[in-house]
Image: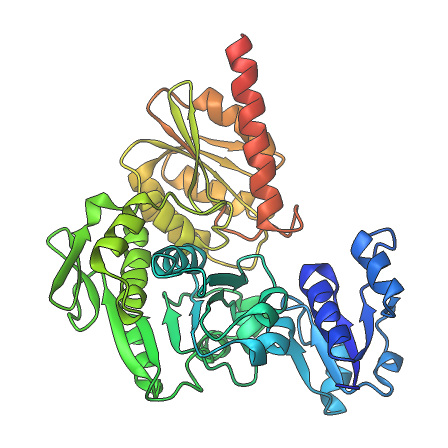
Length: 450
């Protein structure tokens, strides 16, 4: 490569990008104001010749050929604005790895459901894998693509979850199968407008060819119109039965075209939104020639994804779920729709200016008690008060666990589904979810002692 590359933001994706760039012969500098010199990865990369700095001034751009930024860092910070003015290309980590991905590439995006859908698709496709063909999973799901893609063979299948941040930083993604689970209003503080957000999401299919496939949710007119923008073959999926050309729900059963795959009641995870996810996985499975019986068996056994409506267990008669990945209102609405039991809801987080009153119908139908925290606590409290639902303030999600147990009864559901990002109190939704789970186990254990 013989290029000078500046990485903005370290974290796992930055470390993976630096490692790959070194192998390609680049000279790498990493800039991160929160740099931890004692980090083992920092120490190892320094020994390999990577330079590190906490500075992010324009001077860093002297002689730089390429900038690789952490997906979540906005393009509006001064060093990136300067890079753009100097016409230095700015990409994200996954863009570096794209050239290593074979033709067997399945890419998944959407406002909600993309992690579960990615895992469902990977599980289904593993039914066809063998010693010469493996299913690799990477991307926004937690594993940087550049850690995995260079090891990929022509027979392997790569399934990637791609966020709008990642897609915005990729020039020409061209998956063989692109999946769009849905589009709502998310991350508008980053993208500036819904139009920009949609454009970033649609980059997943923008460069597909007629030999490729675009698997897309057909349950709103907007999404059906978006499908007209692709050159790929459109394969719809619809819980509302809006098309029978792909995967759809009919009379309680999941179909692909005219073939019954399984009963919706057989799915291993609850909620109507998981029917959407399963339909997308069925469509990809059929396009990749996975036998119907294997698809049904896999989706029946699928037990969910960590932090996405993850079942923690039954404690003193209460079913507890960790849905920390519900970082927007629609995700929490979907989570609540999966329960018939009374729900004690734990919610709150980063205030992006969303109208929390949009949660009112879902809370009215499902929630018996509301425990709020974070920047959106007051807004959520107003929703609860309007419905005469008891509202309790807590310091954060872990501290909301004890009052949740006190306010619940046997056969109730205790649900962490924040309807907001975690960044006001935690570095990511995983940390928020893990600390919540730890708190649940501690509170439950203390009650057993009592």
